[in-house]
Image (cartoon, rainbow, N blue to C red):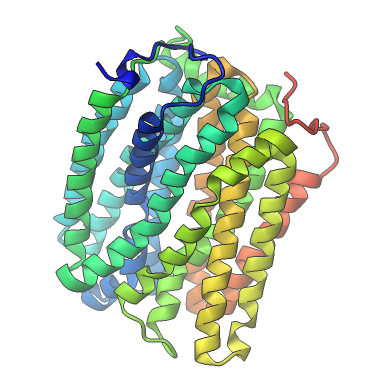
Length: 416
């Protein structure tokens, strides 16, 4: 029996004292989070290719990532709280199976309408990532929770960003359907590995499903700092998703005329920023998650706004600017997210899955809104309209965090 399987897990954490999680367990959790959440973003570099093959316009194409993110938000709301009620290991493996089925439906979709329906299903099932992250927070000792969450989030964020690279290159050489087939195969392998490698988790509540869902409202009402974290991250998500959802459309047109492989390669720039996730986790442990989340929002704002300079620069300089901006806003977005996760996980340890649901429902609702708005803005105002949208909501994210209200202590502890 492996060290992972020998680990006894209670509802509130591992019994390993202050020891860090075994590297093999961290790698498994990070890989699981990354491969599952990557399913949400495979479609983004394909939009230009899908438009050329199906004849769909920018607004219709924008519905594909929007429905994926909407499905993710709904899936988190309806299923993530079950992690407090049932063994997370069983839930994780079950969702992997459903995700494989949804990805296969995407690969076989005969039209853009069917692909939209499959995208909604992919979003619903990809919420397995939001069962894995609270599992890491539960397994880690209190003093190392930020570090553990940051390490697992590195895998999740690399999955988000490298998914665009893999998707673009695969579509360019094998076609867009191969992207979803490859993803289904990877998730199937992942499900087996998680079933064999994860320990069992003891439930922390016996509430029936209706009461469990109703308790989300109580958590929202009891913790002002949780509300602030969720709303701030949601606002930042609007800009993040708006930029990524329309970047392929912008770069595939004049004056760039880049293919899906080149567009997907921009994910490499964002992946470089993802490597800083453990650093943000350690900073949140030492300096307080509120301060680090504010820093992340500020970095994202500067990066979004800088892209407004693109129309006044030569073509090559525009591409360099976009690469730098992608690194910046991915860095800021993930820094804020990791800090907000660290903050909310300290609110009520027995309700971590539900608190995670609150944060991610808000964030992906914002991201879904960003994708929907970006399609219309890009169609009518081009890239500058998307930049204004992203910058405006980054300002709103900062305003929510600094708005006078319940004071958050420097250490980030939330008072009930």
